[in-house]
Image (tube, rainbow, N blue to C red; front, side, top):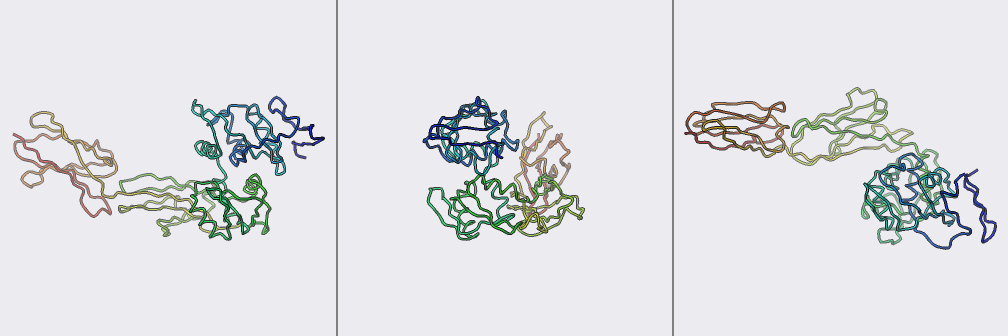
Amino acid sequence: MNKWSIILLSLSMLTFQSCVSEDRLDLPDEIDEAELSESVAIVSTLRAIENGELREDACFQILFPLKLQFNNNLIITVNDFDGLNELAVTAASDQHIDAVEFPFIVTKNDLIKTIDNEQDFIDLLDDCGILTLRDEFDPFYTQCFDLVYPVTMLDIDSNVVQINNQSDYFAFELQQGFDKQPKFIYPIELFDYAEQNNVLIESPFDLFAAFDMCKRCPNLFFRIDTVTVNRFLFKAEFDGINEIPYDWYINSEKVASGGGSDQSENRLIESFPSGEFEICIKTALPNDDCFSGTEYCKIITVDACPFVSYVTEEINSNTFEFIANFETKDLIEYHWNIYKNDDLIFSEFEDAQGDNKLIYQFDAGAFEICLEAEVDLCPEVLRFCTELLVD
């Protein structure tokens, strides 16, 4: 039995049977006729509280009291975080919070912030790393279920749009922007790949519950370490990496495999010419737990031929210090070369362990001091030179 039981005895009397204490909630004597704003963000917030992702001392704190509304139109006032917590853990499909009164006040980083509308609320959750409907819907859509078409959605201008198939959905989301929250007109139905049946979804709460029933694909991830100015180490790191086979892709072209029985140390090292590249890892063999596979991608921008330079400081009349001052000086190997009458008279190698400096004592004459580097996949020699006349 649901912990929350509301029995309407008459138009003026409600008996509220719950474990929630009355000092945390102000319960009305009758159902309030006022309307609050429907909010997927409040559903996400309570979900994060239930999952332990949002605590009282988290990224933001609500300044109570906060007026909320159940999906049966009962309006209540919550007086503290414990009240929110108890609403979160006792929620069910037939009785849950789905609306909030705007504006309300929060504190974040010791600053007071007014949440005026749903978009402000969504932005607050995004800033604090709390998963929204968009964050949770995207990983599950096509992996665990499909929409049963047609469905109707609201665009960013609140116009009703009919979606007839998966292509329509992706085109619609691309037009609206994938950072916008999906706004379905309920009820909708999902086709559950695992159970091979349709599931009725009557609210965002039901949609979140469907996510919980879905067998998740692995949360793929890799980090990037810069080896040189155009050479990178990609290191896959995710739970189950030794059991899950996956492939590496560069600009949609498969370049290597890893995970599972392939003991490749779960890393990829590649050098690149100048340009922009999309690096992805994808599950190689989708299975019953991940029907259409999943991927994780990052885009890198490479400048294989960076600008090089140095500054010159005079120590005394014939001794000078040359200091490399370009941004990628610790990511390339180069030489300090000194020429006199076009002849190379001195050369010193500099790598990541060097100090990016050269101190040299000259005799009299005219000299050319050059910082020169050859970078793999850069078609030209990187070169920066100045002339020096020593008496």
